[in-house]
Image (cartoon, rainbow, N blue to C red; front, side, top):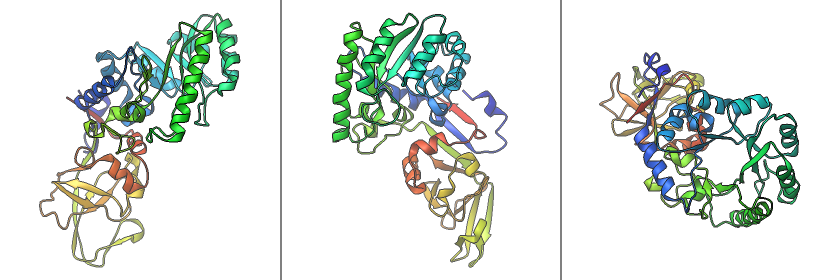
Length: 373
């Protein structure tokens, strides 16, 4: 399957290949770690971490996934208007969306402050499912546990707000035995009991993200919100089951120019790399406008014909230069892997001084996503 938009963009060879078979494998792994009647709420925000939210959502629907999580109302509308008819949680809340939009498209906003809750209740004309976020230690969005009784009383008395789930977010899940994680889990268990006093036939609860799921921290019947692991990347390489993940995105391009660089010649903006010997440089049609970070200038590597070749000079908006002096087989039109199955995105992220999340989410819109398998 090739994204329709992408077909008109093949004049430039830079693309993000999305391996749907690998995605299915990662989803199956996540499902195998659930307990009891628990289900997955795959996170497809930020264009499914750069992989294409609608295409990923429709594949998940084919796999029987009934609930998805996004960050914004706009992201939810892309899925709903594209044919996903399951449950969509808006983790970032309703923001300024009219209640008619939430109702007409059957969207489930997550509430984390009283003003949003009261505003929705005032303006809704018919019942709407909502989720409640509780801050168990992240120090970000969410009701504090000590304020939860008032929230629950309002929900219990409301004729239009229907509580579907209660959740929180772990701040340090990649360290599953840390004091911070243990404390958050302890607080969440107290929250569970607090909620069940008001709603005996309780809504679903979800705390576990990718890292916690991989660490085997599921509770019976709880749901899980995996994100990064579904795309084949572990939040922390030391987590169990990391080796079982399969990378879904391969960010590739092709050599479109080869240039001989004499000893002493500088290349690219600012002349930050100077050839110490007579060299050969491959010029790639990819740059920071495509999501290949400028921080990789003189730091990154790419994979060509089984060999790592260093990035030389500054990464430009549309072009990147790599030294192929020692790769005699380098030729015009040769495929280059920027990251993927041979060169893990985690390694590239380290070279760029960032995290894999940022690289995946940052792949530009002018890069076509090509879906395989």
